[in-house]
Figure 1 (cartoon, rainbow, N blue to C red):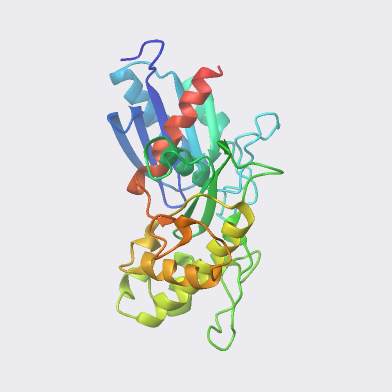
Figure 2: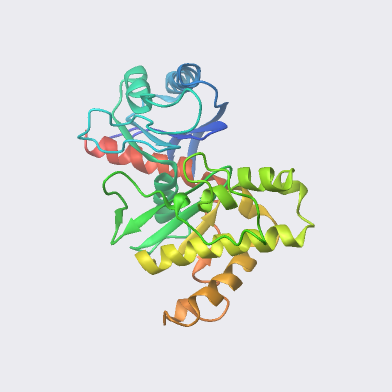
Length: 304
């Protein structure tokens, strides 16, 4: 139904290696699902725009588009570079006008934010953050990023949160790897992302699942990052998503180390025991971001 109250929407999650697109209104009403590899910006955005235009020809006109994108990006609607990618290390994408290009191609209003804020929106609307006004979504994949809400509002500020670039303690004797972040070296992303796993150990994480020392170190770094986030933002829940978190037993390891780091200082029932109600997996699985893009699209439609 594409009436006034439930317009047909499109959501795009633009990732570093692939683009996920949905056409529909929510997780129970998905009319089309499209995946496209991420190459250069001109080719990728053209393919996304064409695919969504073909879907609209088949299913009916789109009311709005939501885009959540790898970053850093400019999410400020009042800025002349709103919807652009900014200082990403991904070759060719610095300065790419993502929102403007897709909006012009489809002729619809565009909601735009980071990939992790998009995932936070999806989890808040339909997933593991339902009922929470202050929470964080942290994704651990090829990179690490975080988004979330404070008192029901998406986290924005001077630009947007960059939780993956938090400094975390590193013992050079235990871990001589200097980190892979091209900007900061041994920040959280530089030490605990999928890229860091591959560069430190010489193989991707999925080939290291029997190596206990790999996941003990990974859990230590992630717990250090989550501890800092928890102490600064005091979220009611932290959601850990992304491909690296699919490693068997990693989430319980991070919970155990997080409890040690908090050390009883923060008193709340959700922070007692094994933290199963505080540090959780996404409720929407790998679809958190692209479903969050549909929430961005609905917001853009309402504000058109």
